Length: 70
Image (cartoon, rainbow, N blue to C red):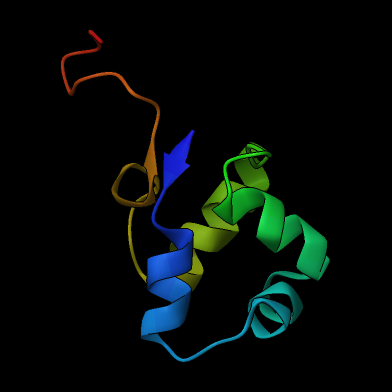
């Protein structure tokens, strides 16, 4: 799943370790999220969205259009 986590993190001047601490996950988890190797659980996706003040849909792109079609 594509996402904007890295851009949002860098825009705030945070390291991966900073973001990991704020989300209570490991730095490796942040790296895996940013590189698309790991899709977050729904609770983690909500924490990420709240932290950045955005909706889940604004941060994560599942590859489908807004109407549900690819």
